Structure formats: C-alpha cells, structure tokens
Image (cartoon, rainbow, N blue to C red):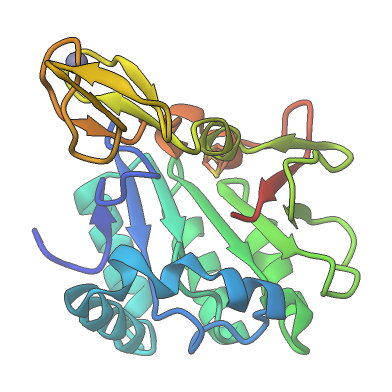
Length: 254
Ligand code: SF4
Ligand SMILES: [Zn+2]
C-alpha cells in the first residue's frame, strides 16, 4: 500500500519531521459552509493544490470517500502507514454529515493517532450531531472555523478564529506558523548559510550593488536565497493536542 489516499509527510506546512498524514478533497465543491471571506482567501485554490496531478488525486479521494468500504480501507491504510498525526482537509471540508460520521468511525478504530480538522460545515443544517460525534472522540481535535461574516457557532466546540490581523482572540493561542510568516514577510534567507536579507534593501555582491530576490546569490557564501523556513505543524502540534492553557486558535488571513 505505498500509494493510497493518505499522503504522509507531503505538505511542507504540516512538517516533514515525524509522520504527519494528510487527506484532502477538492476545495469549494466539498465546502458547503464556505464563507465569502474564506472563498476569497482560499489557499487550496492556488499554488500546489491547483496542479493537475493534485486535483486528479483529490477527485479520486472524494470518490473513495463515498464508497461503502471507505472506513474499513482508511483504517487499514492508517494502520499500515502509521502516522502519529492525521490532518484532514488542508483542502476541502466535511461535505455531508454521513461523511463526517465515517471519520468518527475511523478515529474510533485508530487509538493513539491524533486527528485534526477545521470545518465550516457547522454553519449548515443537519451537521450538528455528526460533528458532536467526531468531537467526542478523544483523539480527534476538531475546530469550528469562524470569521466575522459567519453566525454564532454552537457551544462546546473548539474554535479556529480567522482574523484580518494577528490579533489574538479570547482564550486562544496565535498560530506560530502565521506569526512567523507575518514576521518574515519581505525577508529572504540564504539556503546555505542562513544569512538574512530584506526586500528592497541593496547589498554588495562582488563589484555590484543588488537587491535580494528569490534565487539571487548570497554575499556571504554564494548560496541561493529563498524564503525563511517557518514553524511547521509537526514542530508545533498545538492543534493536535487536547486543549492546554488555551482552548481555541487564532489564524490571521494573509
Ligand atoms: S497552531 Fe501549530 S499545529 Fe495549529 S496550524 Fe498553527 S502551526 Fe499548525
Ligand atoms: Zn550564504
């Protein structure tokens, strides 16, 4: 089972250390509760997720999720690939209560694996009971995503606040990946020696003064410049644990 639908360590934001599995579905089509704000900022419609091969793979995963053998085969795949964390829906969402209940069944059969998902499907009628079933599983870390354009979420769930700025909402931690992404905006690092450069500021490279860009050369060692590596979910794991000091999480839309 080297292929399958659960990708392990395939997403750089989730991290490549440890074993982080991910399962994704086509964005928008499987997001019945998508808000205007999330549709306008949806990262799953761009970049890597928009490549043909990933789109085809997510369509296959969607078809697989609709089959009657989905629970049994996904449990077998998780036991075989042995991820310590399974992150659902970096792209996509719980598209029906029945599909959410399938993940509750899967999580119940995979003790010792931490599951994590963020969902806007709570805003649709008929999902409450299925989402409560998911949330009642000790190993399942479910967050209801909320932004200012949405109504009030039901009580008792953990929330993922989507904010236009890095303003921490009550009883929540700020996602460290986003804090660093904001802090590092417009900065570059040499991939070899780690020297830092700021967009727009000139530096001396041999005889010339140049401005840093992706792929330009480092004045210290001649290595190439790229983005500054950020904290990954695999490093942080705050969303994959039962709540500690803070119950909720705040993300800044960028
Ligand atoms: S808080 Fe941590 S685990 Fe949660 S999304 Fe951000 S980096 Fe990942
Ligand atoms: Zn360098």
